[in-house]
Amino acid sequence: MSRLTLGLLLLVLLLQYPLWFGDGGWLSVWEYDQKLEQIREENQKIKQKNAALEAEVRDLKGGYEAIEESARSELGMIKPGEVFIPFTGEEVAADAPDSRRDTNEETGKRD
Image (cartoon, rainbow, N blue to C red):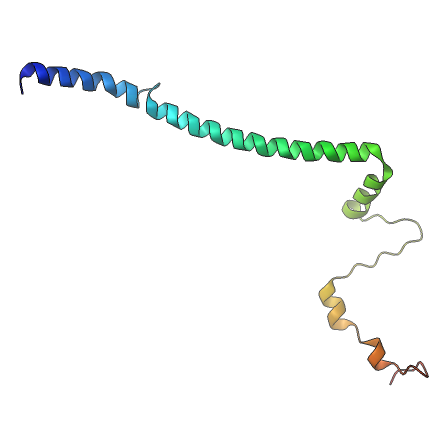
């Protein structure tokens, strides 16, 4: 190769380096696009959460049923005269005897 061709090739490479790897180059643009996509996904999740919260606020402003449901589930409140008995399905099934098997139907007494 002649010196002129080698010099021009070197000049082209020096000019291309900032285009690909510099601050405003293709590599940094690609990284910014990736970050932008992540931020857009996070914003979408936040918008969905905000919409759910707005719906809950509308329900709470609109009626006593939503307030009562929230008080019962989150605070464990009950109405006057009600009795709350917490249980889990496993404990009840293991501990509860079968009343039909243990009770004599005619006398009402246990066997």
